[in-house]
Image 1 (cartoon, rainbow, N blue to C red):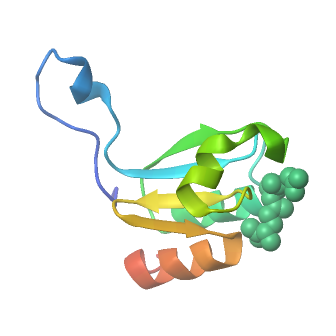
Image 2 (cartoon, rainbow, N blue to C red):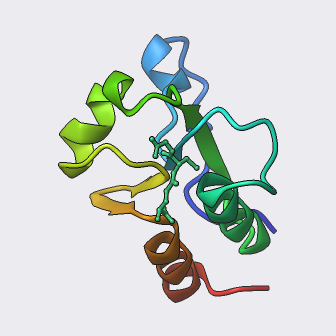
Length: 103
Ligand SMILES: N[C@@H](CCC(=O)N[C@@H](CS)C(=O)NCC(=O)O)C(=O)O
C-alpha cells in the first residue's frame, strides 16, 4: 500500500498537474540510503510506505539557499509535508512514525 499524498491523477495537460504535491525530502546527493542522515530519513519514509519525492541539494551548505529559506538553517535532510517542515533526521524519523507509523 502506498501512503502519503499521491501525485495528481487528474488528466489535465497543464504543466501544473506534473508538480508533485506530496511529501518532499530535501537531501544530499549521497548515492545510497545507507551512509548518512539523509539516507536515514529516506529509509524511514520508505519503511512507513510513504511515497515521496527526493530533491537533491549540493553537498556544500553554501549552495542551499532554498533550505535556508525553508528552515532558517542549512542542514539536510528536510521533510516537507504540506505545511509541515521538519529538519534533522531524528526529528524526521519521529515525525514519520507519529504521522504514518511503521509497517
Ligand atoms: N544531525 C543532522 C546531521 C545532518 C547531516 O550530517 N547532513 C549531511 C548530509 S546527510 C550534510 O548536510 N552534510 C554537509 C555539511 O554538514 O556541511 C541530522 O541527523 O539530520
